[in-house]
Length: 303
Image 1 (cartoon, helix red, strand yellow):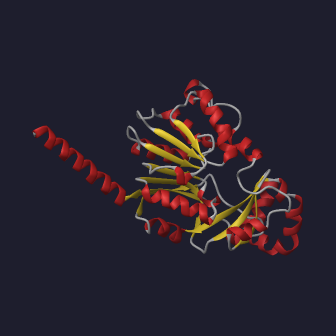
Image 2 (cartoon, rainbow, N blue to C red):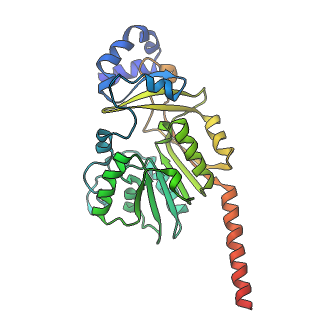
Image 3 (cartoon, rainbow, N blue to C red):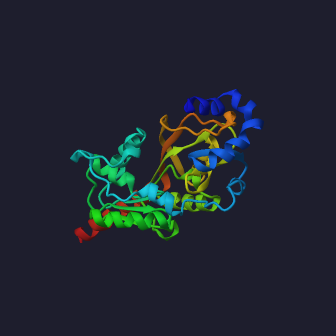
């Protein structure tokens, strides 16, 4: 019954009709207490943030959300008959990410996983594939998250899994990932991400809300904290990457996830999206450099 009522106010014209009468009771009784509930449509990150209840935490750097994201157990391998990765197991689009990682990872590759929490994708990848030798996997997340995640990585002996809080402090990488994180980035944080993307060979993003209409923001309740959430115009989102030399080489739907705002059925997003983008300029430069090095080695050998 609850699912039916939520569908009624998020995806049908009834939600628009009921907005003047039910939105305020919804916000007072349910929204500020419920995990993953949305409220409002706003033109900017700052406007959405101002909608947060007074005195409540905002953003992702908060102990409660860190505990929910990371937990207190080292993720086990499914191949050993255990499965401590329920979030990813029930999100089939994860396997598109794993497929592409297995395709592009080479020995010595450097991965930067923005918003990767405890390194969930790292653990999930290892359930199916062996990491090539010398691969380094750096998760960039909030201090409360990385503090807990580092402890688990040490317990698991995952020496090639590291954690950082500052994306600007990292060198260029071969693979830059953001799996369900871009929509939460402030404009400044997104600008930093795009600078990193410009230096990467491959960029993988997943679980992103894209629409054909104009951009907008909403505010999401995460149980113990609140976070602005951006829904992006599809063409504009892709143009941001094209402007820094990235081109789409694969895309997929994420039908297991949608984005619904009660009393805003015209802003319903029926499924999120995933993309792989390749940086032609970086790839060509590295190929030229490699050919030049091989040429120098040949000349030295001939001498």
